[in-house]
Length: 162
Ligand code: DQA
Image 1: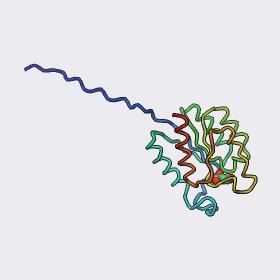
Image 2: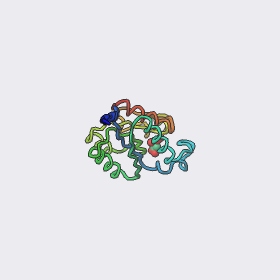
Image 3: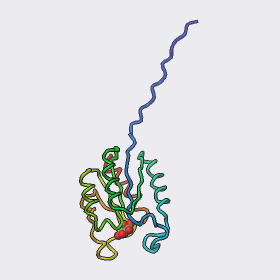
Image 4: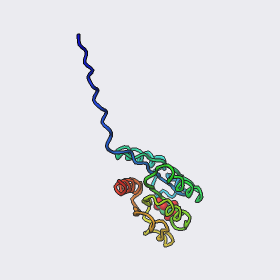
């Protein structure tokens, strides 16, 4: 009996590559769910992170998620991102939004497209929150939609870079 080698069908290469993104949460965001619930809602940071991860899966993105209360640590995360193949940054700089030249400079240094998000509407609050040092170096800013700010920000970031 003659045997024929039937060639196996080649595995289809997945056309869309996974996009690596960094999600950065600034100071006091680890206290979400306990902190000023009337302003930031009852949702915990863990829950926001889980929702982001679920959403990321749907759009073929992989998230590295970090939170820090320390400005320099946030700067270090941004610097490392450029070596780790991160293609975009979603950041809620929290109080550092209004003060941090260091975070702004780090974003300028790595030149990674960044979307700034806030749970509360920073423009409807105290005047010192109306100024963001980060917004001018970001692709855009989403503010005032609670956890939706993060989810909208993620979509906006991926749309911008893909
Ligand atoms: C915040 C707004 C900031 O002004 C504040 O300092 C925060 C949270 C927000 O998500 O609404 O800590 O970034």
